[in-house]
Image (cartoon, rainbow, N blue to C red):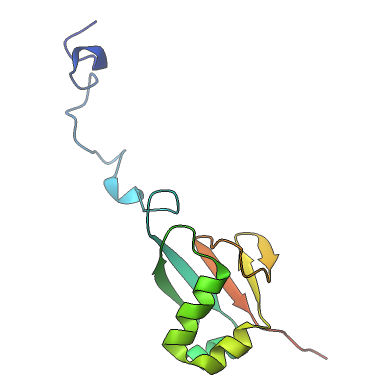
Length: 117
């Protein structure tokens, strides 16, 4: 055991106990396990037109679901948007879902029905 070993209560050799460029503190964002998370919401087609933007970041509590997202957006943009969201699909990570109980991921894509010809 050396004077700077973790067993002696010191900091590991070669460090001063402070964050360095190799361990930046700003890499640590809250997540669903530890507390509120920032979720990037991306809007497409008619939904983007209604909200007037293609994306935004919103903070949600741990364990928030698609239902929570819908309530929040309806509060911000009006009840008519909630009707539209009722027919939307949501991409959570790499999973496409319409399940209102699905937990939010760090990025959520809101996809209205698309028509083509």
